[in-house]
Image: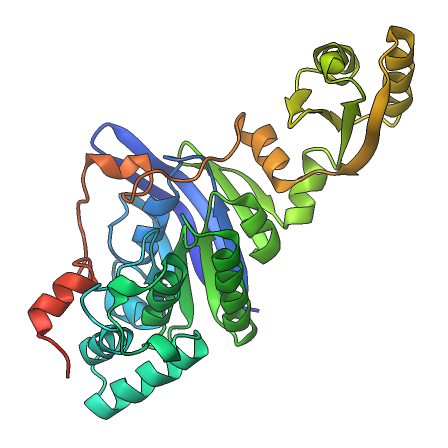
Length: 346
């Protein structure tokens, strides 16, 4: 299996901010690579470099075997990009949005119309094809935005926080669509703060923090590496929660936490469970629930970075973007600007 995306020692600075400090990663063809990290870790910067919208200050990046700096045109011909917020023209209908993209990509009018109709049906937007996008729900706009990124039949898809702000049902629809694309051979680079999303979709995961790769592997490998099991305890009496937390913390260590009315602790010693039971019994704390379960990816993220993932709160993406957007490449105008330049499709 060949590499669809490869970064070697990738470096990017914004004035005094080191956004990427020598990132190495590989996405194999026909798979989903999850790129995880705290806000400001460098995820969006990496995606923008791969998409030829930023120039790296050091190292190199290859997409489809082509250098993103020296062969930017070839790279753009291979990829589709979907950002954190749907970049559709709300005053155009679903058909007009896709037709506009098709014409900008050089398709003839009949070809663009046929491709638009095909994608609208595939993304379950056929009944709304003639309606203005401003009347679409959030999930419909996201599906339309994803459809727009596929007009040119890309082999590689960059998904930067693709389900931000969507309800669980709409997120599930996007997941289903992505699985279908990957089954057809598309490679996806997924950045997300929803760790259940990465757990369900990613074949492999790279975790970056402060511009550096701090861990990588399959979701199961990461869970095993940072503590394969978690003890979860819920006392019968809620008033005993703090005492239970203190007692378990003495046995399990500082990563013991209170979450949702339960105490959780990583299990690195098979003797932890009986030790906890003895301590609680001696303290007279009645146990309502006590279980061992597999670590979640959220707990892996916490162990690696020191805090939980938080969904992005700004449409600008990672914090490192705040110092400006140097070296923006052609195509970094956004779909609405492209529409203004090209004229209204018919």
